[in-house]
Length: 227
Image (cartoon, rainbow, N blue to C red; front, side):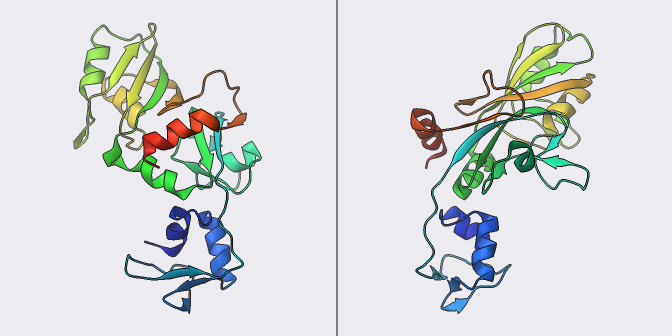
């Protein structure tokens, strides 16, 4: 595991912040100063010099608008941190540039590993609109799993809301999964919005706004993650 990821998982910094600590010579691995890109395992002794303090975790729910990117923006693109105005946090998971909805922003590296671990099968809910009228057989075919090249998606919950829109709850997260599932059944995805991650709901949040997650909602979220 890279040293910056290790420090983030221990709650001592974000990954970016860990890189700064390493560059300042404040991180030691087995008694020597760590270098960017160093890797550690369970037998290594990792230390921070006394002046570094454990960070306070913060968690935000952000309604990503269409056109904003979650990772690796190009020169002409706006990423979620710029769009939200939040600092010292990072996005958990991805949403396509053309998709909208719930993104979690936090400085807690533990959440990344727990939430994105495919073996945990954490629920994420989406509302999807397609260009074609949904056939009577759509709900059954979609929910049983769809063949994508050399992979069949896991069974999922699907509820048709009207002729063009349905709600789907996934426990996996393959790249462009919902759009590919729709395409495999002959539908073109027009709109895709993530409305829930575990117990965290988008509800009536306006696109481009955020709210801090705290109190009972946060406690339930962390409990579901096993934290």
